[in-house]
Length: 304
Image (cartoon, rainbow, N blue to C red; front, side, top):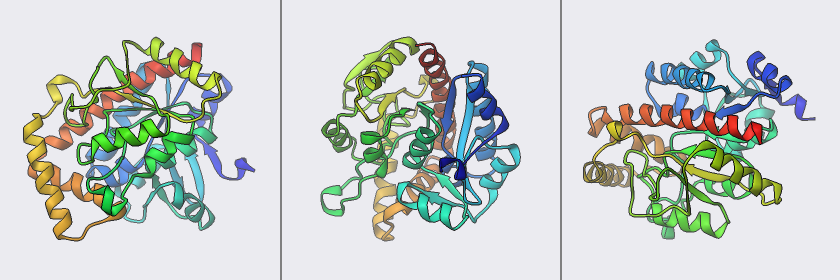
């Protein structure tokens, strides 16, 4: 029955036939995470980095009632410009597919679609998590529950610094999700290379990471893994600078009663405005760096 929903691009279909390593990419970063034309340009550059590192990119989206695993240039362009694309999380998939609508997949939805297509490695910017003041709002990203149950490893620059990172780590620990530092002992916080929080384990290369992933899933331990890869030093923003700006953005979101799925796009937009574009430059740099590492891990995992 899955064949009724899944549709592979020619490149991904060939990769599956030849048993080549494939790396999943989300589409919300294109539709809701970056302005045009940087969004489509970044998407294409990230795909090219994955190819150069020996893997095949599979950008995932919901288009006209199909889960598209791998997108054409025209489809990327559509996602980058159309206002008719909804932000798709786990809860939204049945509605969007049944009604033949279009959706850009978040971390949680991309993990589900990647797992359906038997793709084990997924590259993104940063994961969602427990929002600040979640003890009263109960605002916790669906990404975390997905990591608890879906067998996909997520290469990211840590948790977005707009979140409560300590509570995010507590939630992941409760659900047995390993948080791995790629050449780091400290969890990166998206725009910055460090945070006050330690990762569970440090790994030094793609092969070590792939061995751990294979062992986890061989043991039948369901759920994902967070592979936290810090933003390159030259692209990182200064910690106190970005912290002040995030505090300001959070205060504005509260004043304007912005809640739910609108919070993250609002905050990222406000942070871009207040950093005079520096946050967007950092965002693009960290996604590209994650693509390099993710492709290397996918290649190593394919050889295990």
